[in-house]
Amino acid sequence: MNCIFDDYMKFIDNFLSSYFRILLANKYERSLVRPFIDKYISIRYYNEFVIKENKFTERLNKELNSIAKEMIKENEDKSEKIKNIFALFSYVLFIEKCETPNELNSLIKTLFSDTTITLVYNITAKEELTALLRSFLSKKQELSKVFTSNEFSLNEKKYQGYISMVTLDQNCNLSKLYSEYAIEKAYNSEMVNENKLYLSLLLISYRVIDDITKLNFKNEYVVDFPTSLFGKQKKILKYLRVLDNEFLKSKVNLKLKYKEYKENKKTVNKLINEGFSICVELDESYDMDFDNLLLFSYIFVNKNAKYYDIIINSREDIGTEIVVLWGERWKLL
Image (tube, rainbow, N blue to C red; front, side, top):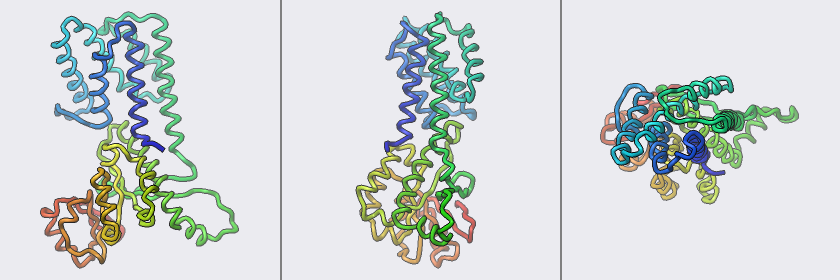
């Protein structure tokens, strides 16, 4: 499967292009619309800002307004068209928040009665826009159903509010002929653990999409990487293809034990160089090599480990965020 985050971004991009093609009709110019769409996506979904404001909507409005001003300077004869594009963008964020057809209908009514927009719409434009928005809402709801399963779900243990350790729970109805021990053993077998990683990455990818549509850009997820995959390079490539987006890579952390890192250093370093976020849990094999620790997104350290004090006292030199394990509790330093 391709990276669903990239697929979702293409879905949003296509929606925005269609939205402006319908409303601008014969006044549509790709060279005028494209800079607004690119800027909107970079802000709305990648949280890339130049202007600093406390409220997201104010930052978004000022960034798009800045684009409008720059374009008007370069295209004075098209200033009215550019102002209309800017005004139409003020509805996009609200469209994305709509959850029911009634909310959409109310928003469409407001849009078509907005006197700040100087466009003239015919009945065809209204019908096409209504169909587009209903299709947009329907596809978003369909996507949610695909990644909301009764059989499998993500079990999240949150630390410090935004980092979650994720495991995959199965809720399948299995035959009573099998004991709980047999079911548990099968569920944690080598091949099943590998497949659980793949399914977890798919579900986490959708969770990241859901987070950012709710304007939550802080959440990050940590999932165990099965060591059995290290001997299966093609399978690693297949599984990690679902994370093949730079933003998504920064939100999903693959966790290894330090021993596993040392045994598979070449492969792990290659993944890090490709932009994947790898975190490491220090174990009895840790050899006090600080240089290696710089590579990881997070370092997990047991409170009772013999090297704990050295790691904590050297955290500025290490330069990587440290998560401390103390029994069932974790704390990000």
